Image (tube, rainbow over all chains, first blue to last red; front, side):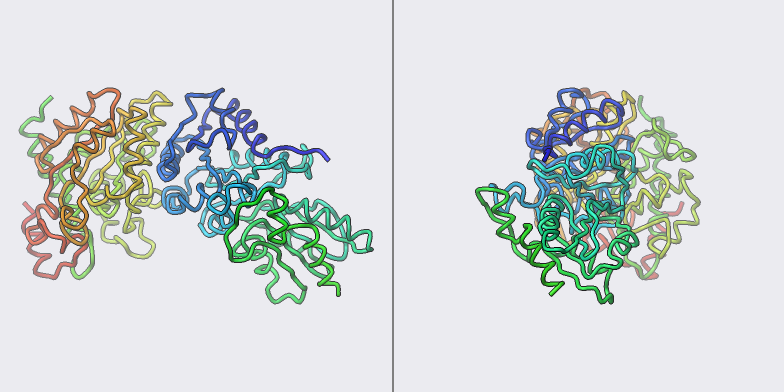
Length: 309
Length: 275
């Protein structure tokens, strides 16, 4: 299974796009070695702004640059680039539908060692709350590239969640990415699993295992969390015996909530997997931490079995 | 070049007109930020009717000078100036804060021609102004960016992030004007939460600092001219002002930070400001 590091792909994509479009500028808050914007900095130093460890100013400054015709990418860890600057994103950026791109690096539990302060399990919920915001959570390196390209092509605020660790390739380099559209990554006829980010991989592992037991599972990558084409989601659940959702995020206002909203009043059984109303914690490894919060293939298998029992 | 006597008289009349329009907009029995709008009216008059390079017929002209009210609650004075310049018809002023109006309680770039950004969540405007100044430098344009701050507002931490950033990036195309009226929503700045000393703090962040009487248009103009000549540093003009200036019962009090006029007060205010 080939893998790519999403942070690295992001950095390389920014470098490529920066060469094609001189409107692109990059703002950092002393994390460029982690977010991988150093690649852009080396190539285009005059369009790279180190803003110091001062995220609020960074976001509003980006708004000023965007209003003046630039396409700024604001970078930090997801927990800081959303929660710490919620009001700046709301007031300076989204209220005026200003063309700022916000990068949430080391999203979810992917910064397993640093613990709750640095883990971001509410970012999707926070960003989805704000009118005019677009929220993307790419599934792998290939989709990270396409999501960043789509963000540049779209005129308005975009939040992109990026995992810290190596991720298995699930989509291919020439797949099409359309903001708002979910993408089927495995077809099946009994149960549909809606997932995003690294959880798509967990769902695929579960689907492969369930196939051996004669259960056919469809897996859908919902990488666009706002907007979401609800019609497409409903289509993909048609004829299924039930739905499972899995996300590396609190169960509040993320993928599970989206699906529950869309199927309100529908008799289909729905199981939502995610992080309950608690903070994260430090762990020696990413997989171990995910397992602790029930974000693994066995949890998906149990949910499927529960629906079918 | 010094303003001529005729220019001074004209700008003083403009400032009086702005205050008149502010009072008219707020009208009777409605809350309105009279105090902080009137304190900065003279500075706004010099900027919009003399200093700034702008074109009401082309609000998005790329080479225009920009003016942001970081203290967005003073929107009334900016609406008055924009209407007076011809960015939109004067009739809109009567629709202030009505549902569907182009004139919101705080500046809105999507609704009002001539408004550069959405400000009013205090502390954010200076950062946005920094971004505009940085873009001007990247594009090698010579437009200037002006940003009006409140002396209560600068308790916001983000102001100091922006202040350090503007100093670090040597944004000499940026001029901030501190409306030092000494009064915030609940009382005197020095008593409620003292943001002083101002000069020393901004100097420490790498700014050139000028102090001026914020009600004398000739002095305001001189300060703005000086700022334009400073290289490699942003400039802060500390404008010493009186809250509610020009409206006798609203002067130097927190009561009209966001006060309500009765009929008698309204008539008195208009009477003072006509001529």
